[in-house]
Amino acid sequence: MRDFLRSVNRIVVKIGTSSLIHPNGKINFAGIDQLAFVLTDLCNQGKEIILVSSGAIGVGMDKLSIPERPQDIPIQQAVAAVGQSELMHIYNQRFLVYSQQTAQVLLTRDVVDFPESRKNVINTLEQLLSMGIVPIINENDTVAVDEMDHTRKFGDNDELSAIVAQLMDADVLIMLSDIDGFYSDNPSKNKQAVLYSTISTINQTLMEQASGEGSRFGTGGMASKLRAAQRVLDSNSAMVLANGKPPRIIFDILAGVDVGTLFKEA
Image 1: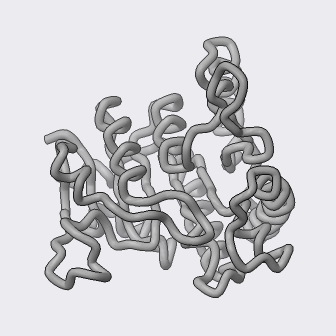
Image 2: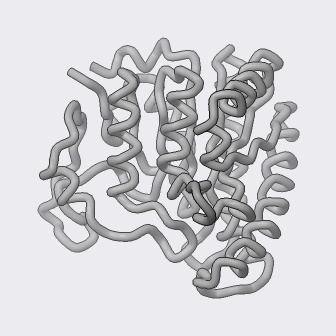
């Protein structure tokens, strides 16, 4: 069932904060470098790559020596502003080692909800891909808050990556997290938890199994990943959830190796 992954061309990769930040709160430079290497090699193969990257607040926390994720919204926005700048600096530095050009694209929900602005986003991303440039997308955390008469926030980058995959008619969304895939229960608490190899339908039972929060540096949990997978399935596309440590697992995924959990209609 995974043979189709060998021939996909347009790929959205979502990297979670837990894959960019070590458990001690320090930046995982080796992981970022390996991600840049893998994605550049895929570009060299002629594939179109879009990276949706979390990590702004996590990197900002490290930069500002803040041990715990702040709860106050203005502080979160300030930390994200510092972290986003530093994160893009690191990405630019590591991708340029492999002669790959990148571009930053910051989005808020109202940008993709309104037809004209949505068209502009798609045109920008299409142009970047045609130029061989890797767009690096994140939510604009400095302005993405719920206010006034409409919602500007996606919720988390899991949903954002699925929306980007929809907008760009991606062949597959590869979601890299800190867990090997989707389990029947929390594997860190239940050693009998079973890893699902393939999921074709998301039902209430699966949603009940997707309990728990994200890490102290990020926001995404399993429930948000299931919601993203549902959006992808509704678009007749596919998603693979896998452990992003190390990012080289992307090569295995695209080779059709049975790693992680594949979400695809039967």
